Length: 632
Image (tube, rainbow, N blue to C red; front, side, top):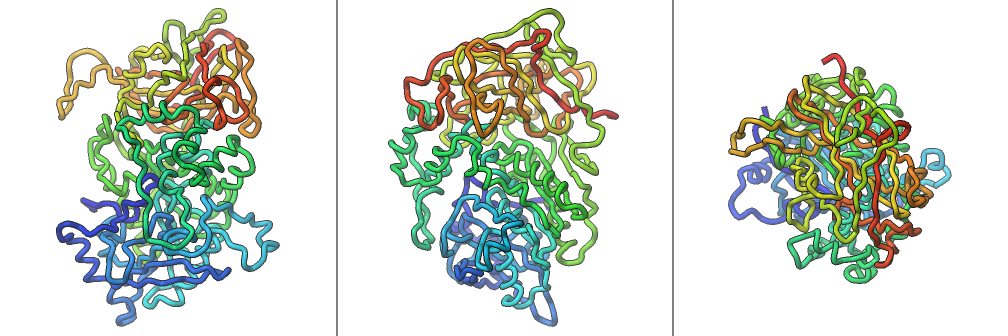
């Protein structure tokens, strides 16, 4: 059993420069073990178009001795393979020390245009469609061809390899892992895309068309700076000059001010995003999902239920590979983790949620066994197709598919007086209304930080429920446990006095009231409202993500949108709560509530107060479609 591990291949989207490039203050036993057991090499590997990609390879010292051979385990990244120089070693090679003890040839590559690799870097470089690849010519490149060329070179040039290759990576490197498996090189036997970006309109940048301003701004203020020449240097982190992102982004004003005040035309992808507010060809070309074909390597996709950066990615990557690659072994692990949390912690808790044990241990054992089996002929890891953690009940479950076959669709309907039930409301037309003021948006977290509040997905929502611009619906205390599994769908009837609006739906587990019952840390959880899942929707996209339309003031309109999967048990005595609001700031940028062709170009005068209604009467019943796990 792996008892402790820390990040090695974690190149998380918001931590691109925390990659072990600095020297430890004290001797690190694991780092010393790597230095004594591995030899480091640096290569510039030519691609088919002549561009050379900088690649670092760590080879076990006994590779090739007496016929000893090791598989290659590769990560391709835009976040640096440093430290640079053959005399400078990484402190971590694998996601655990057991990877290094087991023995692999570890290869790390700067993707083209990043750090010491030549060429032009393109964010989420569009994949050449299979049907046009032959017409594109022999020197046409994408991330799949760069992966193929790298594998071919390593197999021929690195001594002591056994002819088998694996790939893994988290977040952006997860995307490079997914794309590298397309039309797999014959030697590529196993891949693990972890929190992979699948479609950048849906991962990271937007949520149903609503712009993720705090993540995008903070990320591109450093990552997006130009790199005209190969370099090992990192740009300085952006200085917000405040501790509070809510104040910073509120004072920023309209989104157009980000470039005029701070970026000064220097962050190309920010301006490209601003020029493409809708799901047009620019974003559609960065959708990897339809290209995930020809995958012959075994796949184990990994994600976290509390990963608000890339939750769509692992779920949809698993589904696309399952549908488009019959016969390929395709597995999924989903645990109670934030972005990359399975590889940089033990997973006992997150924020205000306590999972009861070290949830990351099972993952660590499973991922090592997966690669040992497929790359070294080790024992069958006996993984199910879906190994998923059930929050609320705090246990691992094994299924032969995801979602499970026994899920039954039901709707939780909004009721009068803030009620919530599986039966539609009786009677005539009813509605609840609330104000929405862009000058005083609902915060997404009570934490004061300028960074991404990674623990907000388990945060007590009472700070929001008490606001007049948040609607609250809840069931009576449950008489039996209720387990929900799979995707959700919001189905709302709404109206607004404005011409545009956002709608945020949050599913919440409410702890019982009653006798004081402190947990191990002395926390009184009575009445606590723990967030299970939340999702915003930009109302202008209710008919099409390509062609937005305005609301007609006062006219009831149906708004439906998918919400990412959950696997959660609401225990007996708890309540199910749904909150509805129209801002979630600064996770999501402010909707001006005046329809404008491009919100990135909205003016101060476009931001207006509005009154919103959510209908709950006969013929206009609003609610949340859930999957109830039957047979429990």
